[in-house]
Length: 156
Image (tube, rainbow, N blue to C red; front, side, top):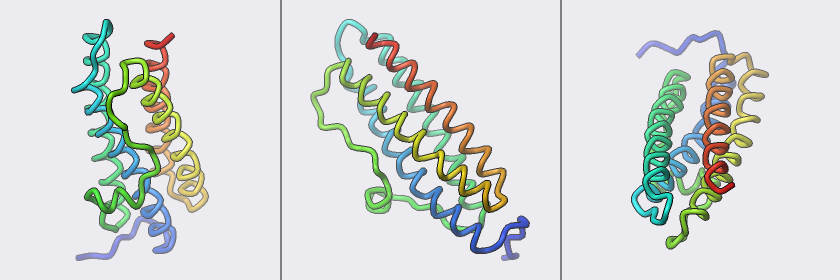
């Protein structure tokens, strides 16, 4: 296989890929949690929240692919599996039995937390000359912040 030559040092590519691994793990956990809430939401806002959660987990699954493919583009294997993600992820798992309001609050907080996790990855990538990863993190921060706003809007 030909060597990766993106105009970035091997060390820069490695640092960015490793930082993206943690972002990938948290995206996966958030997607899984959102899908769980999609399945289990009940109450007077069921229809709207079921649809919102469904749209959000579908968007998160698409984002997973983008983040993993960026890691591969940088020349490194993307982490996968519950054991690897358990070591890398920082978002809390759902406990079960959450009300629809608690679901919205938890997911909004998780989206906000993931925005905060993406910010230093963007800064690192850009400081190392990797504008493409920086752009990806900006896209993710924007989408995650919008998702959090939509969730908070349901709670009032």
